[in-house]
Image 1 (cartoon, helix red, strand yellow):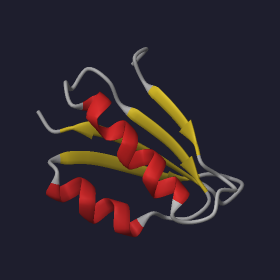
Image 2: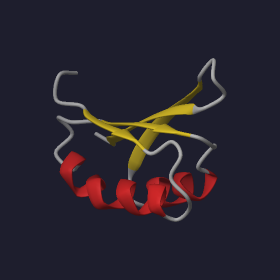
Image 3: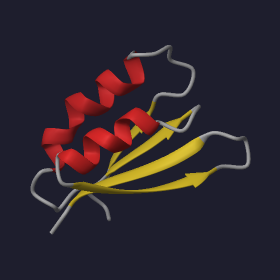
Image 4: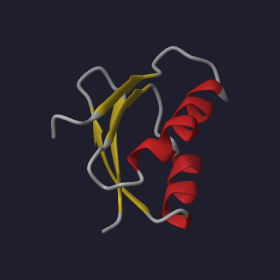
Length: 75
């Protein structure tokens, strides 16, 4: 998708990565945008929030042991 929002929070101390993600979630409410995050660790607390707010996500471990998380609004 060309409307994806890219967010690289690698190297930021907690809770800054979570805060930045939560600030951007309202921008993907319309289902036309996804949020693509690069993060140093698996954001397990974020997954619970996403599920409760009707977001879906996919996660993929990168060769450098960081994670790529893609978030979108459930249809």
